[in-house]
Image (cartoon, rainbow, N blue to C red; front, side):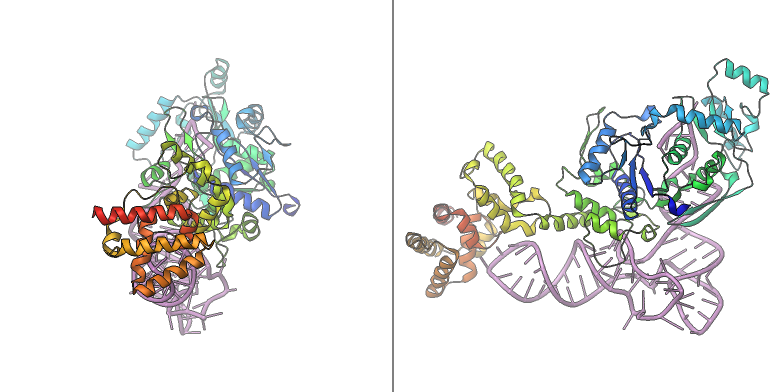
Length: 526
RNA sequence: GGUCCGUUCGUCUAGUUGGCCUAGGACGCGAGAUUUUCAUUCUCGAAAUCAGGGGUUCGAAUCCCCUACGGACUACCA
C-alpha cells in the first residue's frame, strides 16, 4: 500500500514575515525529495494565527520561490484538487474533525481563562511539581468538560462561554516516532501535555490539529520539517491514531537547524544585521516599521548558487563534487545522507559558490550591470566619455578581462572604473617604488613610438609590446619600473589586467593623454 | 527545571556492513610557482589523539555504557 502512494510533500510556512533562509532550505530539501521520487511539492499557507499575520508575506514567499526556481506543483497561487491551501479558508473542515475527536472522547472542552492558566503554572511551580503542564495529572483541577458535571458544561456552552478544545492524552504509553534521519524516537505519553487543538481566540485550530488534518486530506506522504518540531512529533503520531489515520500517516524527517556563523544557536534575522549578510532570499521591508532587510537577490547572488549552497548545509552527496545544478541535486539527493547536527552558516563559502556560478555566466550577460553602474556615474559626472558612447561590445571586452576575479556582478565597477575615469591622483607607494626621474623621457619616447605605430595601422598588442620591449632593451631599463609606471599613468595604481589589454580598450588618444598627463603631474608635483 | 536531539580540522563535511583512516575533500588561512602590477590559476603546507572517560574486540571515528558540553522544545505561535 505504501508503495502505491505517490510521493507528496509540502512546504507550509506561516505568513508572519519574510521567509527565513532556514525555511528556504527546508523547502529545498522537500523539493529535492519530491522530485527525486517523482512526486509533488505543495505550498500550504499556515495562517491560523491572526495576530501574527503580516501583509505581503504570502506574496513574498511565492516570489521568493519563483526567483529560486523551485516551482510548486500544487497549492496557494497554483491551485489543485486538494484546496483551499490557505488554512484560514479551511475552518469548516477542521471543525468537523475537532468534533470527531470530541465525540470519540479523545478531546475535551476547556473553559479556563488565560489568568487561570497562569495561576495554575505559578502554583505548580511553587509546589515544585515535576510537570507544570495541563495534562492528566492536573486537568481534573481545572475547568473543563472532564472535571465539570455534564450539566454545567452544557450550561457553559449554551451561554456562549469562550472555550478551547484540548487533546486528551492518556499517560503511561510509549509513543514512537520513526524519523528518517534520526531513527526511532520514543517518549512516554505522560510528558505530552493536553495541547490546545482549537483556539477560541480566532476560532481556528492550532498548528498541531490543522497540520494533521491537512496532511491527511492532502495525501502527504512525507513530512520534512525543521528539528524544532521533533518534540511535538509524538503528539502528532498520537493525533493520527486518534483520528483513525495511522495506516496512512506520513513518514517524518526532522532536519538539523541552521546555526549562527559565530557562537551557538539558531540563525536569526539579527545575525544577518549584525554580521552584514542576507538571511532572506529577497529584500524585505517591514510594513510596520519600514525597516529594510537585505536579500540574496538584491545582494547579487545567483539563485542557483543559493540553492547549491543551501543544499550543502546539512547534506552531502558523499562524493567530492560540490557544484551541482538543480537537476543534479535532484538526482543525487538522499534524505538518509542528511546530517543530524546543526550546520553553521558560512559566508565565505557562500561567496565562493557565487563566484563559481558567476564564472558560468557569459560576458555579454554581465554587460547590463556594468552599464547600469556606468550610467549612474555619468549622472554624477567626471567620466572621460559619456556613458552612451560605449558600445556593448566594448563593455563586453572589459567584462571579459576581469570576470574571473569577481564574486558578484557589483564588483565589476571596482575592477573597471579606471577605464571610464582618468586617474585623479597617483598611488604614492607605487610612485615611490616604480617611478624614476628618467620616466618622463622614457614614456615620452614611448608615446612617440606608439603614435608612429598607430599611423602605420599597427596599434596592436603585439606591436606595442614589441616596441616596449625594445625600448627597454636599448635603454637598458628596468622592465618592472617601465611597465608599472605605464600602469600608474593609466590606472592610477598598480592593479588590473595586462597593460596592453588596457591600452587597447582605452584607445590611442586616451592612452597618450593619460601618459602625458602623468609625466607632467608626477614630474612636477612630487 | 523537565523532555528530546546532537558532538570528526576554525567552518561545511567524507567516513555509515568495525581493519584499505599514520582520518579524505571543500571554504578560509600560509608558502611557492606563473606574471610588468593586482587578481586569477597551479603546486605544496599547517589544521581534527574523531567531546572526555570506561568497556567489547586481535583491531573502534565506527558497537555498548557513563560524563561533559551544545541545541531545540516546554503558548488559545508556528
